[in-house]
Image (cartoon, rainbow over all chains, first blue to last red; front, side, top):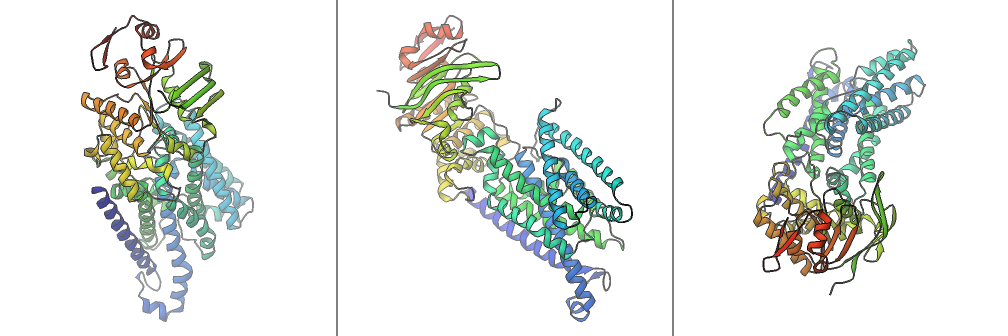
Length: 335
Length: 257
């Protein structure tokens, strides 16, 4: 039966992608600027204690963070698109990213320097951003659902950006402002092992639960009434899934600053490869997101001697892919 | 010869905002029958179906499903007992028909479970029963109206329900598919299941139903065995125009208006 064949080919595709991700991860660890730009052979790591230290305390956490960031955004993007029946949304278009940035910034000036407070504050503000966007989208008087959701997201994002601007003017220019500005540039150059230690549970646990629930998530994309007729409680289910999808995104954004477009384009790539069924496209989006994050961050660190902000690279690559994929005639068309 | 009630409505009232749709409605829909809901546009046929599904809650009174309050059933139990064929459904993503109808297995799987071979088999059989084997690999957004209807019907059947709620089941269907739908409804009755459907087509009702709910222009509801209620007088009153029923043999009728 063709169904089973597709099932199998999806599985082998996913395994292949996972292997690619592992290979790119290992390769990324060996790429850097010390002792000389480019590839660091393992023999150097053995001989040079500084190289080993950089490898363990800088590159390893950074590459892991890049991968987790991509995974969180890819997964979040796919889930938001499914649940809102809108293939044009991503965390940055729903008020989540700007909300998270505002929350993290607020925690810096309120003195909650502890990473965990920054994460909680980012998560709370990100969830608030999403809720505001959703409520506003339902009340807007113009346009269809796809448009209203995006318009509402733009408005809420702008609100939080303004809030973040206010937070910056309130920040202590000697101690807090430099820290905040550095972080807001976007990027992972400041990632330390302790950042990562704080972030891993907030990313890995929700992603694992979402992967376990992946088939069910399909049902929420059919609309509330259908989901109800299939024996679900759509309101509860949707809240749970959205919560689980938002937390990894805000957790990583509290480390990286705002990184856009990944969450929009990765789900499209995944659906192209794996089909719409979230059983395959959700794990696909997570792995492709990880790859995307790693590769963009590799370019950010290695392309020039100075660091390029990660957000610029993801936007660049993301928009190019966006144009290629979304204008192709075989792409799903929605009104 | 009609069986126990599958649904029983006791003094049920329901309104949408200011508009009172039903008040103090008493109804009893026999198990193992085909029940047609007829009435003019906007009188609440679909709303009644959604009340029976449990999706809408009565403001007052109760709806009993096999003797127990529908609203007190677990969502999973409800999903295994009742399925709905909606009038339309919006999907933004390119699910294949096979993937999509498999969603009908949801009430039988726990949240962490993936559908297995057995579920696939049930879904595939349902698709065959609904007459859609040929469209198994097609993408949902690219189906025609009639094919979408077949796909939605297949998903309903995949739920293996005791009670099928069908909202305008023959919409978009060509003559041959329409006949298949009629046969399907009858075969479900033969298997002891209950079929409840809304329609604008009294002829379809006459060919299939043995129980009838008539909703009049002022939302007065009449219900009873089909043959008793399906009269020129009642239809004329419901639609507000003179209606003639002309038997054409085989239990079929033509409705002249």
